[in-house]
Image (tube, rainbow, N blue to C red):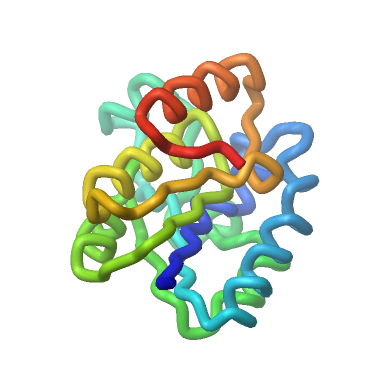
Length: 173
């Protein structure tokens, strides 16, 4: 069985930076455990990083969310230290918006039986990349979001998104 773990945007700005929120740091241990489990099983792991430049406020996202964050090269853009130390040789996909086209291409070029997603933020980037995984994976691949390894500043919206994902045959485990 070929499995993939996608660690979405576990970056400083979403934990204790510009868009940080209470509880974001509490899932770090669960993400570390997942990464170690996947490594020990010789499964694949990839990471996404939200990546913006100084022109962020002029983008569509910046007009709707006018808080500069994850500016490439700055401290807030970097992966959280506990996670950064585990990247090793894994692919890291920079993405200028919620979903990663590069992740979709990667999934399309590999045949995974299961794809697991974790990270931040559950109702925005994790949601978007779960949809991308569902779109680009084979019709036999199971897509799963690990509830204990994702979070949001808006837990009510997170539950709504989880309901939508379940409706799209994406498991919340």
